[in-house]
Image: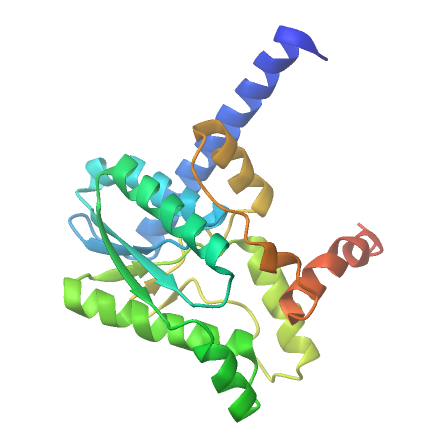
Length: 232
């Protein structure tokens, strides 16, 4: 279907999908034990998933008296142009939602040098540093929780990566660990993209997400064909 009728159908479909995201996120926050009136630090990278996370929590905040603040960690890994675009997207989202923004930057190249010197995975080091910095910002702000934008596809990729690494488990991403909560973990990437399009949220697609040097990207690229081969 094309033309105005097709556009109307597409808009209704996107709106219905956006409602699904909001309902699932609200249910998840309740199940995670995030009480009304809590102060929540929302980790926003500038990418599509965290843009949805902030917007949907903002849409629910009034009804639950949540006090939201934004935290942006610049890992210093991307090029200057991409990092500037991410900062601009995060600024735009924070302004749109009228919330306070905290930002911290890792000096460019520092994580790459640490990975080379230690022999550890750059992905692992970046994740560890991100959580350290987020917890530091939460402590300084007095936040009760730190909300992260992981979704079901991230979870599946993580399970596969940990199995490939021979990890004894647990393999899945936890919905909550201490102050860290993941209210989008039951939702698929496609659900979040519908929400993103419906609300026209500013975001940046990080080109490093297609970089084959990173294990997660290789797993992500192969998963659709692997899943298609599984009966049912």
